[in-house]
Length: 102
Image: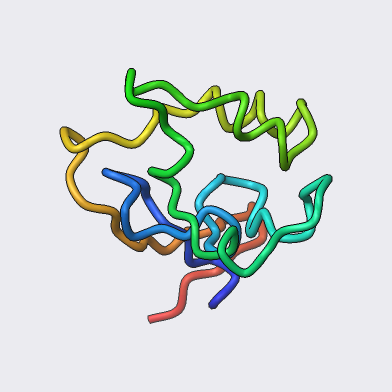
């Protein structure tokens, strides 16, 4: 069940950019980077990748990630206070062969 837990990003202050699973269908971004990460980089939150203008900081992302991954992230709404706090959610995967038990 642990693989089905991911973060719903609100303000982005509680979600670790590299370690936590927050991009749907991607999982952790750790291992997908194109440059070496230092210990300080590993503690960066999702909110650290948003500029003062409230948009994703694409230039910062491109220092670490391939452009295709940056494009995927930039298609998501950037974190902001109006979205509330970050929260964990459980993904329920249902297939046509799934069975419900009582």
